[in-house]
Image (cartoon, rainbow over the protein chains, first blue to last red):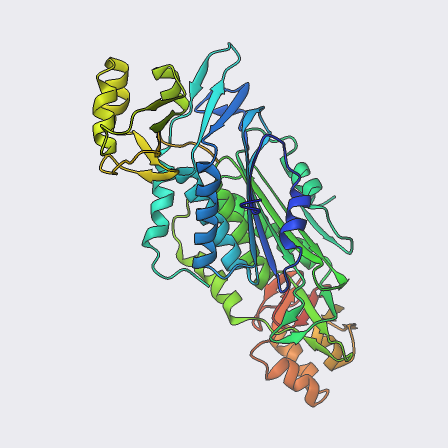
Length: 160
Length: 160
Length: 83
Length: 83
């Protein structure tokens, strides 16, 4: 595999299994922070029946790996993993997993948060919602996601 | 159960199972952040054979529930869960789980981090390390943990 | 040749997911966009008059000023919404 | 009666995990500590001359100034180190 710590896949994932793999072979881990993004059953007030995730094969994996490696540069981490699903999903399905292990919790919390904020604005995925009446809508990018990303550019000295 | 979202137990826990329970019965969840604290195999340069967790039965559960409810006051959360193990553990064992679900990721990240920071300084647990030669040492409280807790008192307006 | 890809709402609005074009006449993304915009109003609105237009060249985020050479892969898409 | 508990290193240093004492003579945690400190040097160091001493009364964090009444549960312990 080109990027063993980045997976873009149709299949669902099991959190325990992935976290176990993340920790395997690494010593001196004291903290594991994981983020799971799930399909909300309501978005902007509307019920959602199906969520479809489109992506840009090739660029997606590269973008995720760049975000992951940047997190390893900024914080002292033991290991990290990004899984992003593509294709059709139902409400409550898992979409994305970001998991980070480190000696102490501060680095793991910050790095996982950072990876998610950058993934949201820099990884080429697009969400399309289908409503109960069959109509569809491409999800709009949120201004707050861009603001969340920008926050990390201000922080000159992240906690180690 | 008096505090169904707080568990103090000898048994290990399965992350997937706990996260599934955390999400059950809650609608409109988009983000689940979980923190797993694990027994490090090295602490302050020394190898560790066994870690023993002592606690104050009764007060522990109450303190954890207070921390959890305070997080629900500060952020808009759908659900949260704290599991803390007691008794003897080996390196790499899971010690603690804090998991939080919310609509958007910002609240879940901050609340999980907040709960861990407060748990570290306010929940009556004590760690005792046993080294390969059989000698033991009570783990000292870290100044950085107190600083981490204090950080939350300065932030007047947490992100919703 | 240039490999050109359109994603998400762009793919739907422009009615195609990818195409190949002769590379010789396009020196920058900007000149490529200007040429594509002559195809009609949908193209003009999506690529020329769209402040939300995102561009990637060879899997890296690029801009209108990015230069192009034969064999490059160019992609046009709206702001991303994964995660 | 007062129920008194000692945890972690305190339990080991003082050689006991809990005891019951008549409550009538102790009006605050401070007076209780002063009385316990007369038992010897270990007690004095752990409870009287220890800036790291943590106190709980009825499962809430308390201070030397916290008042006591019959039936209260008092615990003495070092700074916590869970998580």
